[in-house]
Length: 283
Length: 303
Image 1 (tube, rainbow over the protein chains, first blue to last red):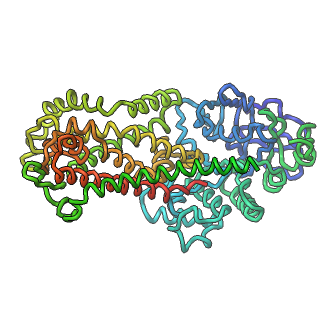
Image 2: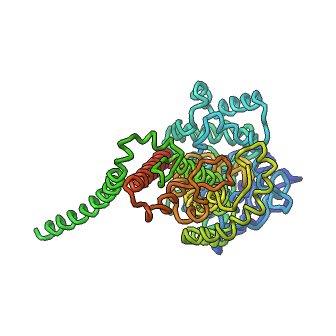
């Protein structure tokens, strides 16, 4: 696996051997497998070039944060990682996104199939209004052809437990999903994504519509979830990125400015733009 | 001072416009009720249960036209509802923007076609086609199922229903498209994010929550069909009788009034026509009100 030069610095940079990428120059070395990577990924809305040749790695069982000021292309980049970007009329993407070593933009790759493995949680909690709490969790499985009642029941319970919602909703599983509070709805949406047993979940500012307490609960949940699933999170909240992520990428005007271990980015950034952004001098 | 005076004058004038519209509505209802009074006095329930309509013998019953109106409108909505929903799915969810705008324009133009043109087409094209090509297919079935019993003269209840379907299709498609437009994009993405195909996403994220709206659109479109006069009069066959066969000629409330208002001379005939008019008005208002209630109940879903 070859790197381009953008993050081959000295301290806190990555080098790779045989598909394994290891962090060198740190006391607490961790070695982790790349589960998802973009190579020279470009994205457009019409003629507007939003993401410019971004190459990034995401590691298995980590929380990876993407930060940057509004309009820097971070959400668009995220949406390219499971081919959601192209669902917007006039939007297109070019480049390579390897998931477990296979390019999801390959001509034989089915977007629907890609999204079963790379799930998504959105900015605004978006449970299906015509469905109950239970139906919301299992709808993806149902569409995928799972019919057995006990399987659906078991998975619904497991996923609701995983997001810490089970005790709150177990007596009203047939109530509408919209009857829950905003924070609960977002956890329901995470349970809905988990039900598909994806390897990666992409999260597009999942707490920006929530109050501080609900936000804290979701942050705890993400740290817990990374034991079983890799998380890529876009956030405009730098404290959030610092609190929960293992790696951080900083995007500016569609360019990748810096990528590295979160501690490194926030305490010892190599680029002056990064430093100015995280110290709140712009954006 | 003068500005507050002009404001008062302005308000009074606008208020008068509003009152005028309400009065107009009431005056129509009162005019019909007064005109139909000789019939109402003898009891409307007898009137709507009697099939015979024979001005020569002075026998007036509204059952046949009630039946003709309800059956032709039901056929119309049975055809137009699935077509309208299908067209809306295509326009809003599947077609590229440019194709969608061309198709939307054409469908809106369909709404601009004068009723009498639909009548002409129905009489000279559709009616012979049903008589010569469609009805014969069903004749064997007609031995056992009375609604398919022949022979067909071309004009009839079914022909009226099909013409009506085409006339209410633009209404149906346009309203349903608006309902789909109200579904936020994040709902479609929620479904797509779970690995659903485009069609599954439409079903789960767009069609399911739109059901009450689609129902209300269907009821509104039916309301249009109930009162449609010109085209129906030209193709329904104008026979005042209840017949179970879809191929038989019939009569609707609107076509009856259109056919006879000019030659009705004796007061009982006129009163009977007024009573049919009053019935049609009441049914149309009730159906419209029901549509609006359904629409209102289902409206506040998206915040």
